[in-house]
Image (cartoon, rainbow, N blue to C red; front, side, top):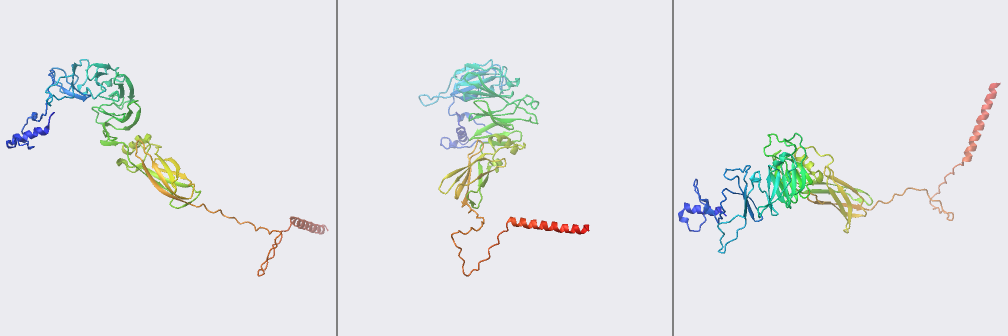
Length: 483
């Protein structure tokens, strides 16, 4: 254990001997002077000399795992050692009876992994469930070792993808599984106790878009909340990046893809429910997670009559800083919508909105469920409702939230008045009752009763007489002509 503050305090005392032993903490290094860093040691534990330098690779489950390059040759970058020493030390030091720490410590085990051909810097990205893992690039197999004893406990079958699988540089242990990804476009899960393959997700064929025939994974995936976030990228891309790279979210238990979004979103970091990564396609930093929302609701601001239907409308919008005021969109359409808003992709056709529930509460506190309606791609919604009774109603619109958005609500008011009185159509005056004699006011002269309509028989008789007369006249005229 090394204490930088203590080392610099000692440096100050050396520069000014008058301060030695005064107990005053002094930070007073001299420009250009070299100081002995061992002055900062709080305690120091020696390990056995194994004949080569050691690099700590991983600390976990009470063990410090160290390794090095080939014996007797400089391996500054640990490239493909043929003799592969691995050593484990206990990570916990117990104090001696006098209260001090021991000044030396022995290793738990030491092995030369002569059957492994790979990069030692990638030796163990995780220690979990009593196991650490190493990848042999020559045979494309993973080896599992007992972290307490160093004994090999399983070896996987060779990777079943392309030969680019030898560049499988990322592997992590979580949830009782070993998760791996490489240049062959596969993300795999193995049982950490047996080495058995549990599931295999493939990015698919890239055609001639990449040299690998698929979309590779080089530097980093992240595991959180039983999900795996894997980004397509590579070690040394061309000046023009190949297209089609994505960040995918996989179910850690089943390997099912939950969602994906375009971009070389490499080495994502996750904290507080948000994923943050830099997209190499556009050099922008993206933060992905739930965003706040805002909802509005509106009803007619005039009192309507009972029995009248009313149209209730409103909007539901995203309030995230990146796209504040844009429509809220369904989870299944979210990736395409974000690509449209931020990555120049086409607007998704027929994208759906989110469900909004409307409720009415009358003045007595009785609640009425108006219904649930899905907003459209523009963020608007509408529903028709007929209030059951007169009075004032509070109308509440509620969005319960989704995997993409937080919840929100809004209220408005609606008034309902009496139904209109039925209109009375004019009708004929009722005839007087036979038993009642009509009374006539002395000051009013009774008007003549209307003439009765002539019976149809009379009209028929008159018509017959006219016809006879016409015939008779015609006969007389005809007789005069013949003379």
